Image (tube, rainbow, N blue to C red; front, side, top):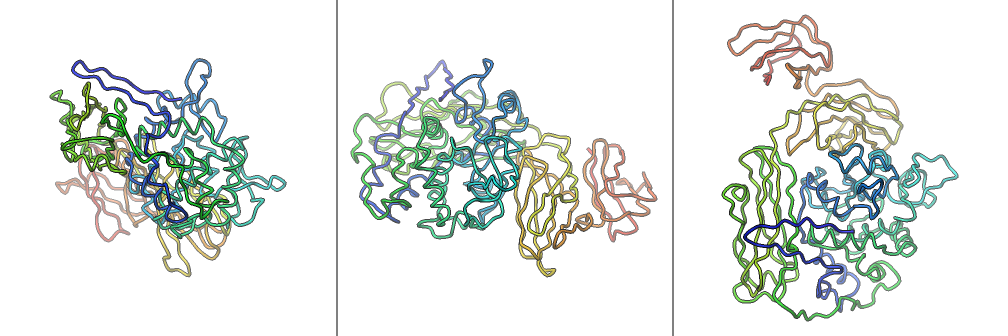
Length: 565
């Protein structure tokens, strides 16, 4: 069920044009192709799309994932991971309250920047869903599979199950099994991801491999095709596909035409596909994407940050010298936004991929900002039509270093990283994990989560360390202390990144140290000793007036600088 926010301006009217199916001619480039050539054509069609910001996802989920029926008169989230109705209800009223932005294909599987803002797939809403936090955490980065319920089950909330696999081939001890109602949904999302991002390198090959053609390994093909066939496309998926198109500018072809999966991985491999409709597109000159009357959302941004939104402007039957682009001038808000060009050639906007337009949001003051992007010329007739662009600027956040705790549930092949939640609001936590073998560093990687724990799998014979940072509005906190997880199932002690380190603390500062410190002295910028502490333990906090200080300790070779705001 789709909802569109309509805003009337006195000067112009933004016209809504909602497609119930893919626009005419959207899939014609697939006709006459087979095998690898067909998959490459799908990749070329769906890969160019608007890259969303991570913070904007909460603004989009009410369009993509609203449940079709109200509960107690309220709209709620359609959560495919849980039947936690309280969480579904709360999410609509001012916060996450236990709901996460879940990547159905785990970010840790890619050998790419794992920070969600750093790579395109990290914010691709086709595979991002609102999820109950506990179910998300239990799912971890396990592959899809069917759980052997005759053995001990690790997690089961009635919708999501995690446990030992009943079918071999996943390469892991545990698998994640969604409810039967959603198995086809997940399968078609995985088909899309294996095609859209077939050029990515996969670090973990539980279900994907580094062949750009098939991409899915045999285990994945078997289980996903089975789920795809047994759970056909639902109206939920069709509605979501339409909603995603208005937001992101691309579609999941395996939802629009379920037979496509058979041509790539199934029982029609090698056959020529001709299901893309007519190649001729007739009718008036019009903009297909972004859909006129829809909204583009930058989400929230901190003061001093700049955000770019890359959208692919697509049209059909545009004539003459092309289209002209103008931002609505209200003397205030439009100055926060800018365009990479004010004119697009007709051939570029009529092409299959469209023209990549960059919209920049660079706010100069705190507040909510909006403008309207108008398209005209190129044969477009009738009222001038446009798309709303929104962003919100907030003050620079104050972020304190989290406190990492000793790992839990430690075994020879897995453990849970744990830390204390910080007091301030954060978007997510970033865990930096380093893996050692025979004392030598093997690799360092980052993952992020909205919980205060994260489950890692590891190889036998390795030791690991991790530390945690919080992230908010594009800013990152100081690092926590470092935890070492020893080889086997032991846990070594807590270590600091340095002998002496500090972190913000309301009205003062907090010490982070891997051993007790002696004769700690704090000087102001005039060289006056303002505080002397005989002994300081890890996590010791003190109050100090606003100012800049130099801190020394007997065990530290050089002083460190601290700022108290």
